[in-house]
Image: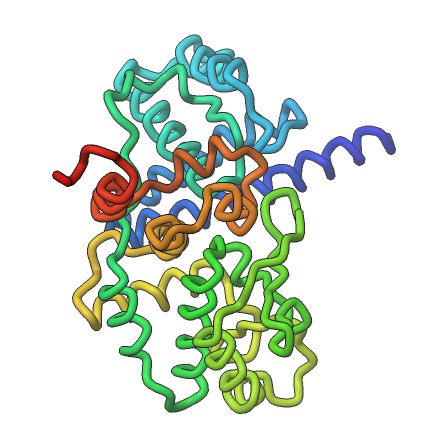
Length: 318
C-alpha cells in the first residue's frame, strides 16, 4: 500500500513539474507569436497528455528520450485500449512536441532534443533576432525613472542585457546575488550552477536606484529575498517578465519577436563584436560547451570586415 502511494505521489509530482514547463511554453507562444486561445488550449491538451505518458514511466520532461516520443506516437496510432488517433491528429501532436522541445532547447533547459528525428532536415540554423546597440539603447532609455514599477523595469532590462541572463536566472535572482560594491552578479543557471558575471556601471546604477526606493515600496513590510518582485510584492514570474519586455518593446517600436532571449543573444553578439573572446563569452553565458556558444552567437558583418582589413596582408594596397 505504501509503495503504491509513493508511486502515485511521484507521478503527481512529475506531472506538476511538466505542467510548469508547459505553462512557460504557452506564455512564449502567446506573447511572442500571438497564437490564438484555441490553439494554445489544443497545445496544452496535447502536451499534458505526453506529460502523463512520461510520468507513467517515471521520467521528467527534460529527461525524455527519442524512444519515449516514438513510443508515445506509436501508442496514439494503435490506441492501446483507446480509439486510435488519425494520422492528421498524430502529425499535429508530433508538431506540438517538436515545438515544445525546440523551446526547451532554446532556453537551454535540455542539451538534446528528443524530437530531432521527427523534424525535417533544416538547411540552416535560424538564429534569434539580435538588436543593434542603438535599438537596445532606445529600449533601455525609454524606461524613465519614476514610480516603483518603472524603477524595477529599468533595473530588470539593464541587468538582463548587461549580464546576458536567461529569463529563469533573472526572476530567480535574490538580493544577495548582486554585489553592487564589487560589481558582479551571481545567477543560478542550468542545473542550478552558479557563475559570476560582471555588472556594468549602468546596470549597477539602475539596480541601486531600484533597491533604494522602488523595491522597498513594492515589498512593503513583507520578507522577500527575490530581487525582482511584482506589483503586489510577490516574486516576479517568467510570464510576468515576458509581459514587461514585450510592453516596453512595443512602446519603442521593437515589438516583432522581442523576448528575454533577444536581450541575451544581443549581449553575446555585442561582446563578440567589441572584441571579447569566445571563451570569456562562454563563461559569462554559462555554457558548459564552447560549441553551444559558437551556435548561439555570431560576429556582425562589420566586425568581420574590420578584422579582415586589419589582419590580411593584402586586404589594402600598400
